[in-house]
Image (cartoon, rainbow, N blue to C red; front, side, top):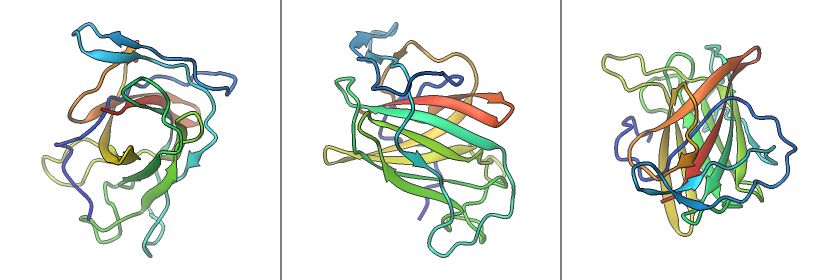
Length: 198
C-alpha cells in the first residue's frame, strides 16, 4: 500500500540546485558545522557522477504509464549523522505519473514508477524519471517522490517536494517534507539532493 500523506517523515534534509559539472571522483570531505538556527548539520558536499542510476518503471504487473511527462534527473548523496557518505544503502523510490496516479486503477495501486537499488561506494545515486504530478483530487498535497533508505538497521522515509531557489550551504536534519530545488534546461528538470540521515 502507498502512503498518501506527506506528514510524519522520519528523516532528512534535501538541498538541491542546478546541475554541477565535476569530474566524477569521490565526494569532497564534509564536516559537521552549525546552521544559522544553531542546529548541527553538514556542509553541502561537492557533487560528482554516481555509479548507480535508478530509472523507475512499472512493477507488480502494472502496465506502462500512458501519460507523458517532463524528464526529471536528480543527483543525490546520502550522508550519515557524522556527515560521511553512506555506501551500499538499500533504496526504494516510487511516485505518480504525469496525471498524479500511482497505477491504472488510481488510488494506492502501485506502481507506474518504482525502482529499487542502492547507493554507490560514495553514497551517491542518480534518479532518472519523469516529473510526477499532484494527485487529481481536491486539497491534494504537492507533487512529490517517495524515498525509503535503509541504513544501520533503521528505515528512513523521505517525501521529496519540489521547489526553486538556491541550495543552502549547510544541510541540517529536519522533520516533515523536504524541499528539492529544481532548475530547467533544454532536456528537462535537473537538481541535486543531499539526504542527511538522522
